[in-house]
Each structure stands twice: as C-alpha cells, then as structure tokens.
Length: 116
Image (cartoon, rainbow, N blue to C red; front, side, top):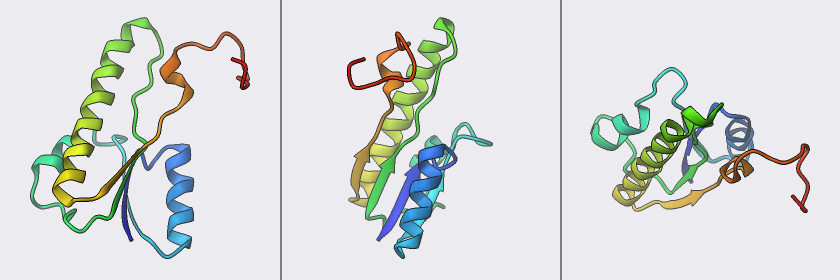
C-alpha cells in the first residue's frame, strides 16, 4: 500500500513510518518542520503525485505552549486536517486520524493514567 503520514517528523510518525516500511509498504511522510505550508501546498499543487494513495494517516497537530498560542494551534490543526481530508478525497484514500491527550488541555498531574 502507498501510505501518506502527516506529522512524519514527530515521535509517533517516525516510528509508524519505520514499522510500515519494514512491512514493505510505500510510505511518504510530511511535516511542517521546515515548511509550515506543506499541506496547503499539497492540496493545491498538482506537481505532487498523491493520486495513488491508499491511506492517509493524519498525525499532524500543532501544540500550544501557553494560552496565547491556543488559537494559532487550533487554526493550524484544523487547517491541516481540512487539507489532509481534501487530499484523501481527491485520491479516494482511506483517512485515519489520530490525536494525543493534549486536546483535553493541561493535565492535572503527570504521568497521566486512565483515571485522569
């Protein structure tokens, strides 16, 4: 299968890509590290060969460091998700979305357990 992983420079993205490649899948990874507009570019630029994708594994998300960053992070995360969905629809690829516990806000304690 040909699989696109967004957030491919992150911890989970790197390990997922490595495991999928070891299982003989063709893997393309993208991350906004070094190119903050990468998903926007992909959804609009015909030069990227994404027509034969089987799966998009969307792991990309913007993290926030303080309250002022939350709206920027929300905008970036929503925009990248929208762009990834557009690519999936265009390629007729399956779309898998994964997220972290950070969507729930600041933890009350760490490490977080199942009771948090």
